[in-house]
Image 1 (cartoon, rainbow, N blue to C red):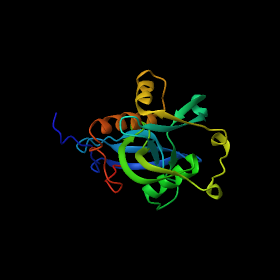
Image 2 (image 1 turned 90 degrees about the horizontal axis):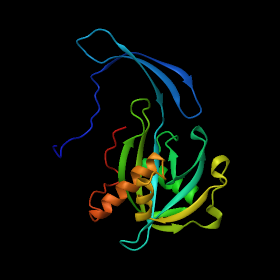
Image 3 (image 1 turned 180 degrees about the horizontal axis):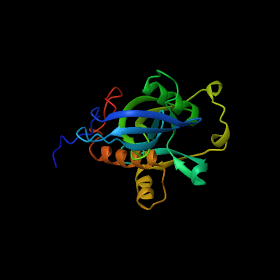
Length: 211
């Protein structure tokens, strides 16, 4: 397979009509009539969730070869489960820079700042039924925030448990089926792969993002 394999946007599929069926607190349900074949006049119906997108942060500390990552345990009601996750947050502030959003979320969820930021991986969470796109950052050179900067956590975030887990153990937990959050699974495996290549695959924070 060519090393130039790359996903691209395809503006050539005509959207004949688009209707917002339901407006939600975070996501909307949208119904499009789209002409998939420009030579075939019959459009098809596609329903999907419109999502603002999100950023996630894999916070990493420790000596080379013995790095640890931060995981938060949070209740996720749709799956009725307590999940171990990396810090993350919605891109729900219009016009906000993606990296600034990640820095804000790391401070609010983990009480941390990071002096070094890189792009680890981008992905669509469920492209067959949602347009949600997530960018996972690698956050390093960490420091605790001051007491007066601590964020008040509410709802599901109120009782979050925070742990530091060796990266190698986190990889083993993914393969054992003990971690299920997609940004966490993808971020852990991408970090493990990047570390094996001396972090060369990391991208700058202004790297293009297909979203």
